Amino acid sequence: MPTSNKQRLRRGAIAAVVVAAAAAIPAAEASSHREAPLIAADPAVDNTDVYAFTSPDRPDTVTLVANWFGLQEPNGGPNFYPWATDARYDLNIDADGDAVPDKTFRFTFSTDDRRGKNTFLYNNGPVTSINDDNLLFRQNYNLELIEPGKTTQLVRNGRAAPSNTGPASFPNFAAIRDQATAKLPGGGQVYIGPSEDSFFLDLRVFDLLYGGNLKEVNQDTLMGYNVNTIAIQVPKTMLALKGDPKRNPVIGVWSDTERRTLKLDPGKATPQGPFVQVSRLGNPLVNEVVSSAAIKDAFNGLEPVGDAKVQALLDRVNDPELARLIQAIYGIPAPKTPRADLVEIFLTGITTKAGGPIRADLNSQLNNADVDPKKFAPSEMLRLNMSTPVTKNPNRLGVLGGDLQGFPNGRRLADDVVDIEIQAVVGAAQTGKLVPALAKGDRVNANDVRFGDKFPYVGLPSNRAVNSR
Image 1 (cartoon, rainbow, N blue to C red):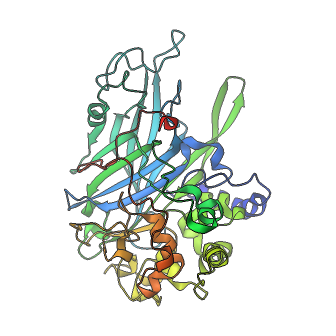
Image 2: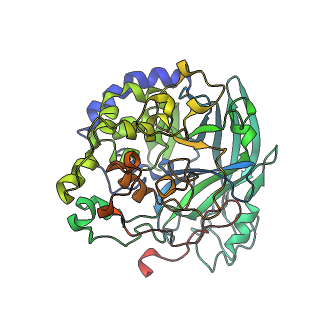
Image 3: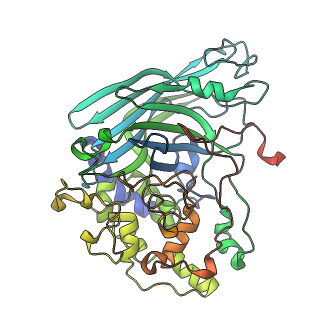
């Protein structure tokens, strides 16, 4: 949620970060995880993915899912994967297209650590309920809805589900997750806790694009890893401009994390100073493969309202490095630049009202009846048209596969965003046809864990060691 203090701090800091980041440590292995040098060192507040979709079993509501703290090995004890207690975890909604949140769902956490001097154990026996005395490490959360001039407390001291430390400790984690799902005023619900990572892909894209010959594919790199998840389901009327999803069905969604500076002393870290945005995520893979290494840290600290002023970012969208790499390695011609089609996908939403080449009115706030076009600001966020009917038989390629409910019109858990974005980069969104040479993509077409049919839809967290597979 932008504040005047944050804006003043960042205007001076962004330019400095852009210059300094070029000399920073190399970018780490990434999907939407560990995508920038600085955030790679602070995984607890690292946004990994954002999803937004009409709830298939409750089509009058929208479900938003945001994940943090990627690449969790399930056996990573004894501390496992707590939420940061000196951070703010935000889910932002922009309904009028000015790139400033109209609503922010803000989550803050506290810890109830009952281990003391007696044990190193997370739990000292089987845990059969979220209030079981055997559960020694617990986290609670508050949820606020922040709107211009107004803050409403939606949940006070809610219980976050603990890390799934294994089958002996949690013989029925599904029951624990159900107990960690809370009702919201007005008919919504929220779940906070671990889940199996919903993102599926072969990360060997970074080995010179799947080995240079598409042989390094068919391996779900994130299989077996968990993430920390915030899932919230709310009525569409709560998100739409003027509360009217029929006239104003399109919303923009992104997550961010704000953290305070830590003063480090032996055995102690003390938060101090103002909150500063340290991570941000809207569309998948933007900061990973669109941004250059020199602007990744700056992007994480930038609010969407400032995106159109960062020429280095606009240049990377209009002339994407990935298209040139594919041409050099596979001989598939890169589409002509500037790439107005990618500007639509990532910065304006797909609409005929912005003058772009994709002749459709799909998911731009400019399509909302009550939006003032003069206040519209191109910005990177995940955009969802809430009026698109739920697809009976979803296509993993979303809009490119003829399924208008899929990515980039929002993002469902089962959307194959890697294959979609690679096809978009080589021009499929302009032509309306898949590029045959890349039609098989990374050959990881679905998650290894089944998604649920009801909220929170995400897979139960794994409790098996990743290297046991």
